[in-house]
Image 1 (tube, rainbow, N blue to C red):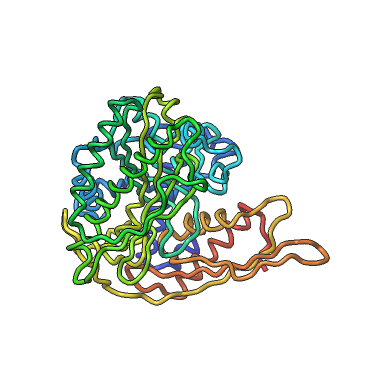
Image 2: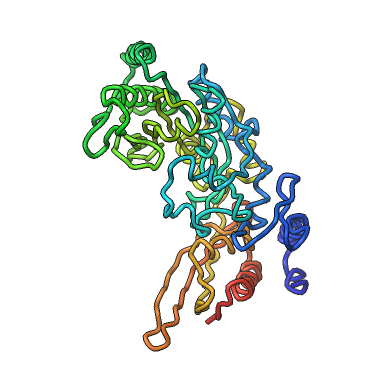
Length: 441
């Protein structure tokens, strides 16, 4: 390893040095992990890498001038009378992340291939909804919660294993007084949107394919769904109408689509027609009564939504690569000011360096695609732009499985030499052999 590192240029040596320093902190003991100043025992579920753990303290949504922070502030200003929360720890129990929200026991999100586990009893939250019950239990009836969330995922320009979500919710008393308050709020929202230049492609508030919950009055459920739609139409007009749409003419087009989420019913996805194409923006719905029951507020009824800040910021700021949000390059950061949405100007497009790795998978050590991507991220960090599987076959006689992945090395800050890419590729292959017992072809 030391001979390999000596062949690397100073810039990559610095990257490797940082990685080694963090790893020495991360692995204080072979049977423990340290995160946010606390030690946690490892077990067979542990799959958290140093590359991911190093992101936990960054909290991009709290850094003034960062596009994600500005977008967060803009949404909070729109919902000015909501409680604004952003300081929950990302370390939660699987029960909090899944069971409190009525996720099925066989939901794929529970798998170690999809989520980051510290051990079998603790994990990194995969969504802001992990705190929904906790916030409702404290008595909040209208709130926004912003947080970093973690999912094992593919590598490309729009996916990153750490991203930022904002969750919003509003609940009403499920009685005559609460429904009167809901009716008044509906009237206010309709009046506010009366002159908005909007074109809404809607679906029914409830339907046989998107039904109210069995223990909900269908009329009340439809009213809550309508309130949700009007609230989010108003938000989307704030984000994408007027200034953010530049010189485009005509109304802002919003499309509502029936959807399924484990924690809401009826459920919807929302798309906006922006710069010539439909873009998926967020998911939402009427909160599962079981969630409110678990939170100790069984006599409430309401809605919730969740959106990805990176997804919207990439659209509004014209940021082409999700890795850029993590860049500390002044050429990126200097383009943004607090509370202003500006168009990002690319400062360079450095050349790609493609490397293929082909191998036989060990018959006693399974390898999921997310395992491969996580390993590549841990070795190469943000020097990898995307990873694609280019070949997969099973030998007809031996029944051994062969995979081939193409890794696109491209730095956002400088040109990588072929020699540098080869050195990193060698590290990837060594880790594959050591960790998953593959046979390089």
